[in-house]
Image 1: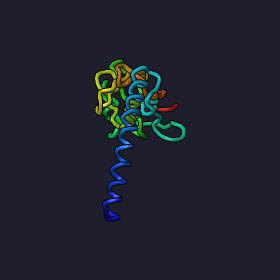
Image 2: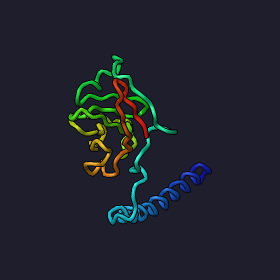
Image 3: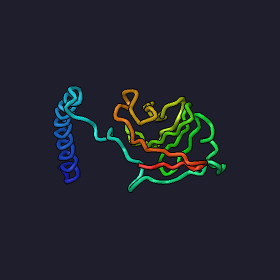
Image 4: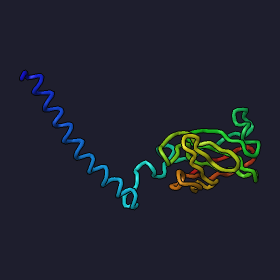
Length: 151
């Protein structure tokens, strides 16, 4: 046998041993997930940005016109800010807790992730299985035509 054949044979044996071990490991992992003893680290509630959240939005600025209509929303500083059907404001992180994607938007009085359909109420509480961990929500305060978003 040449050195190349020996090396290839060693690789195949090593891979087979690895796959055998993974077969048992995968079954054990599946059992843990099904019993609820292990949770995914990607389902943690996610903050939108490092540091504190505190900024204002000028509602007279044309870039923010969507916030003058009920159901409208904008995205600023990795936060989705929306005007609810009641005329109040709600703000949550842009990053969905289901798989950490920046896909959260607002529609029909709830926040929604377009990647996998996770849904959240106006306070960030999860409304379905993909949104069960919820998302970070922020306070809003309207003073005249200035909307403040803060933690």
